[in-house]
Image (cartoon, rainbow, N blue to C red; front, side, top):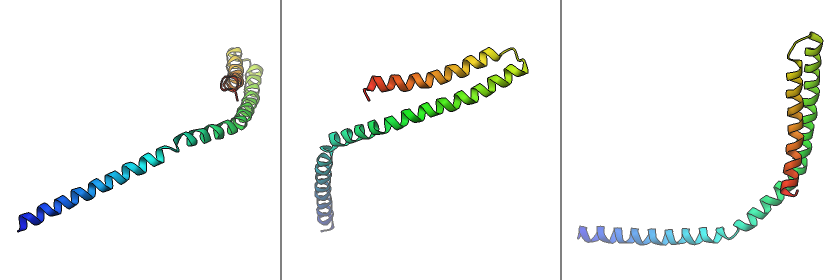
Length: 110
């Protein structure tokens, strides 16, 4: 008799697992239909933050330009020979920030 009860137990266990797995698959497929709406909402949120991010990038560029100007001025007054390299590096980094913000803005049509 014990053998029959084990078979019955495993049979019930397997049938419950199949029911649970079926419910899980149905639940996942029902949630998958909201993916397009979620992607569209994320797209709109990122686009709304982009203008603020561009302004922030311009602000960081201006701050770096001020710091760079002070450093170049100190090197120039100190008579250091690599002043032109430092000035070019700081100027290049500021131009890079402005160009990147403008290119991304025009590329994505924001």
